[in-house]
Amino acid sequence: MSETLRPDLALIARTVRQGARVLDVGCGDGALMAAMRDNAQVDARGLEIDGSNVAAAVGRGLSVVQGDADTDLGYYPDASFDYAILSQTLQTTRRPDLVVEELLRIGRQAFVSFPNFAHWRGRISLLWGGRMPVTRLLPDTWYDTLNIHHVTVDDFRALVKERGWTIDGQWFLKGDKETTHANANLFAEHAVFLLRK
Amino acid sequence: MASVPISPDSRFGLRRQARLTGPLHLSSGALLGPVDIAYETYGTMNADKSNVILICHALTGDQYVASDHPVTGKPGWWWRLVGEGKPVDPARHFIVCSNVIGSCMGSSGPASIDPVTGDPHAMRFPVLTIADMVRAQAALLDHLGVDRLSAVIGGSMGGMQALTWPTLFPDRVESCVVIASTARHSAQNIAFHEVGRQAIMADPLWRGGDYYADGQVPSAGLAVARMAAHITYLSEAGLTEKFGRRLQGRDAKTFGFDADFQVESYLRHQGLSFVERFDANSYLYITRAMDYYDIADDHGGSLAKAFTATKARFCLVSFDTDWLYPTTESRIIVHALNASGAQASFVELSSPFGHDAFLLECPELNRVVDGFLKGGRA
Image (tube, rainbow over all chains, first blue to last red):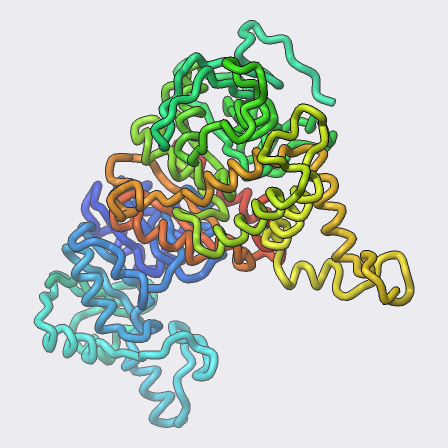
């Protein structure tokens, strides 16, 4: 039943409480939702912009609504979920800061995961090659990428501080393994934050 | 033609009719009774009665959802969704589809006989609402011994009934599939209906609705109503693809008012074939019911409030070329369901066929409905 989850999703699936109510924003084809439902009896709802992804998710019996994180989160009531999840979607939104604000309004806690633009490979690409990085985690060229707000671990921490949010947990990934917090901004390919207001 | 199976219980099977003593309390305050309901059932109800699915039909639809139509001989109007190996499958489900009250395929409507006078009701039939149609369906389910619906499914006006079900009977519905539909009729929807009604009433044969005695029916008016409505079921791109500016059976324009263009000929055919199977007064009553439809208005102006009492799961589907009930209408419902905390799914599917897409070949629609219905059993 369980397919191999992307490492950041596997981490979130391991961390959510049994039976929690979860809103997965940008849920794709529902892989994380299905894993949480099957393994942790989570009551999961999803929001996804791509119609064929939504059809796939609904086709596997999940409650997923086609919509846009930038415009549709306002229709969810305050504190209606235990967790709101935004995985690898932050950097594609028009106003990432407002989207996180909305996550923290709708969910008591929010998981936010994103590729770290300050990973050393990207730095080298820009420093020596003078070109926008095209890496495993950021495989698209600058003109066709959906990532319109590249963000680094330190950028995100600065935003958290500025807005007065609380970090309840943070995880850093290199490939599919967790890596050290030390120098995460340089060595983490991927970051997962658990936030609270 | 499908045969009527020998059933130990005469309530179940094809081509059934029930007389419910009623009376039915209508939205207008009027009482209707006795009420005749024509319906079909497919499949077998299981021991705990947990496999019942109600299919709701659209404006000019009927109970023949998955069996050959007795007048046109065509296969059931939703055979692509309902039938063996389909998402709604008589091998697994007990399926009920009934003709809405106000219609003309065996359920009480303006063409049926008023027991008091012995004449057809005609325009003396009470004005109905979508909620009244749903109340009649609930009364039929009582008659069939069905307490709860595993699912209620409908497209277009059928979607209006499906969406109304959990608002009227929050504990009788487990899931609700609403396809190419809306929570309220828009000004544009009402406007198109008014054109159709005026076409019927302007036909000299309409005679205030009392045309049943001599069989001289207002077919010209009804055909025009159908032609105008039919345009709204299609898309501009679909019409262009199907007909373009091609001429009908001729090489050059005639400089006259014959059906020069294929699209004209097609619409005339749609109008003419429609009058053979539909009653003009029923068309007036059902379009009126749709115009009065506004679920939020029945709940103090709040659509979300309409769904707070139900635990039902919802699945909404719209089509990108449907301009009669466009995606924005489905989104309004989805936002209300989110606000009320209901379990909701929604997807906009792509199709060139406009509103009619819900009746046509669409593998994605079948996949979504199948997954949604099975999702409840996970």
